[in-house]
Length: 336
Image 1 (tube, rainbow, N blue to C red):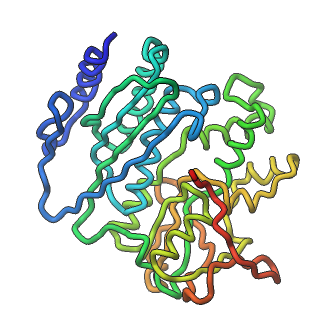
Image 2: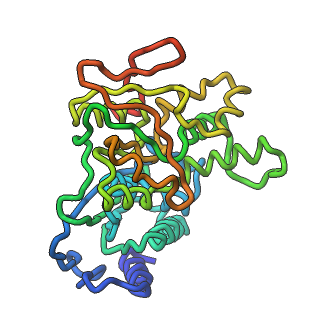
């Protein structure tokens, strides 16, 4: 199949889905055409996945990779309190990969996740790569005008919350580096089952779109960021933009229970994984004291945890651990 046959096939798949009236033209022209809606702001995010940097082909599956390629951008839109609407995905692959079922399966995983949030694929590009696979995903979202939740709105006295649990993706990455792989195992063994669940946490992340919408549409969060680089790094990003400090309570950081169990047998510190491990794709957000009572306890079955408080910038960013108080350095993922 050549690239034009594949594009025609992809176009047929997307046109078979229910398309909103605002989509005037999707795949098939030089650019997509979307009708602007009055009273709405457009929110746009782009992410890049590069083989051997962001993923290894021998440790994932095409459908999972397609899912993750879209999930990371959906997570950014969620962190803005916006609703994801449209996606453009560009892909560069070596010729031998193109000749296999890899690309078709990758798009199956991507489109399956897009359907979960009624996101429509409206374009992208295909190219030959000399070696590694490269995936570029752009997601376009929208929110009521003026409602986008920025990183810059936190104030001293705000409470810090995080959705879900932390450390699972980082623990899974350590397991992958030590040779663990998805597969058919004796899943009645609790250890094996936990490992497989953690691997899926890393390879098939769940963007917190539901929480993002609630926090944005109800104007509950004063500042927000998704945890992609790690709690320590992303808290520093939020505090820098808001020009504030923060204090975290180490006992309140919600560590994935499977991480705590596995770390005890592998000489890993679960708190360090939760603080510095990346790609949990949970939402970290600040809430003013008057809005705390308005927070739901769960959204889509997922809870949240109060982990700290915003402080004046002069107090820095610190962690309270029993009687100790120590500076939290940004030690999460860095590309360079």
